[in-house]
Structure formats: structure tokens, C-alpha cells
Image 1 (cartoon, rainbow, N blue to C red):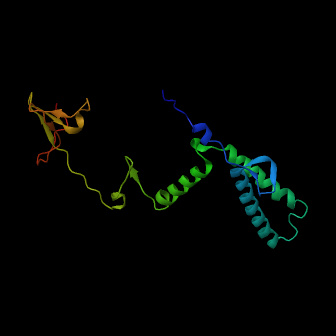
Image 2: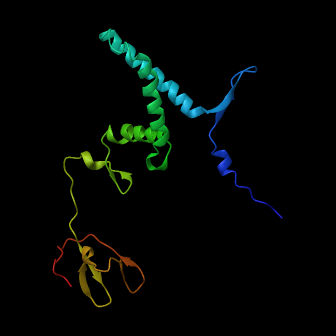
Image 3: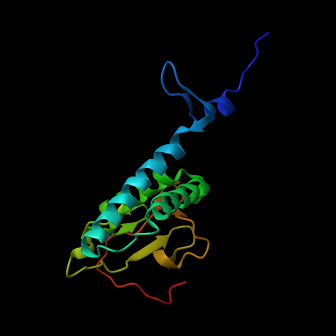
Length: 174
């Protein structure tokens, strides 16, 4: 008898760091992703504070360490809690950036999930509506006036559609 194992929970376990070198290990494990987030946010905050201190030299004199540690810690906690659309925040931001660069920046337009090529044309022309004849009773109907929303089928089982015709369509046809 075969036994099926579900490894999903094991693979979703976050990566942790405990042993730093051969001779030194931490007394507790630290998760890798929040640690990387904290170090990246700390570098960005330090760079931002350095630029501000170049312009205003006496800024952040007494609160330098609090801001350098507190702001990245808060940002790391927020990044860990936020899951937009149930996704990882980085995958969400990457998808948002792709959408902005591929769609919004070049002003693409979509219709039925396909990009529309002719939206920039100055003049759009439409063909005139033409008659569709239902052959069973000889009645003339317009293609857009089908109340059932189904195609009209003739006695041979073929679907009748809009055909090109020189005559104008009677809008009150029954």
C-alpha cells in the first residue's frame, strides 16, 4: 500500500540562520528574509540620513541611533504583515512594476484581455447593418435584435450571420 506524503507545510517553513561560522552559533534561530529586509532598510535609512545631514549638518544628532534602528525595524514588521492579494509583498510589487512599465507607461488599451492596436487611429469606420433572413417563416430580422442572444440557424443547420448587402436594414423588422 502506498502512502502519500504532503510536504507543503515543510517547504513553506521559513529559512532560518543559527550557525554563523564553524566556531560560533547563535543561541536562537533568526529568520533569513526579515533579517535581509532589516539590513536593506537600515542601509536605505542610513543613506537617506547621510544625504539629509549633508544639507542640514545638525539634524538627527541625538536621535541618530533610534532612527537608524527604529525605522528599519518598523518597516520590517510592516513588510512581514502585509500580504496584498494573498501574495508575497515582493512578488506583488514586482507585478505592479511590470504592469506600470508595460501597460500604464505606454498607455496601452485592452478589450477582452487583448491589447487594441487601433485606438490611436483618428477615424474609425463601421459597416452598415444588413439584413439576416430566417428561412423557416420568411421573416426578416436584424442581427442585433435577437432577443434570445442565440445565432439563427437555417433548415440546413448552418448559422446565419451578418452578410454584406446593398439594402438598408428596416429597424422595425419583425
